[in-house]
Length: 71
Image 1 (tube, rainbow, N blue to C red):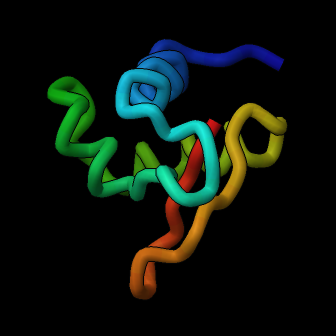
Image 2 (cartoon, rainbow, N blue to C red):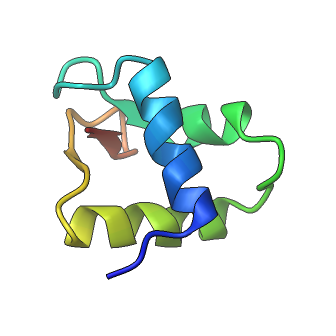
């Protein structure tokens, strides 16, 4: 399995934002604010689902109706 550039950027942002447990997890909207090169929510969603499916990140505590994620 190969990780692309956007997925690596997502992982580095999560590390910088200290999203390392369920309580401090972050949403896709938080990640989207930090990434200037990716403007599409659906692109981020697909990348995050890939990372979840392959065990790089996990689901955190729900933020209203939105999922959150952590490393």
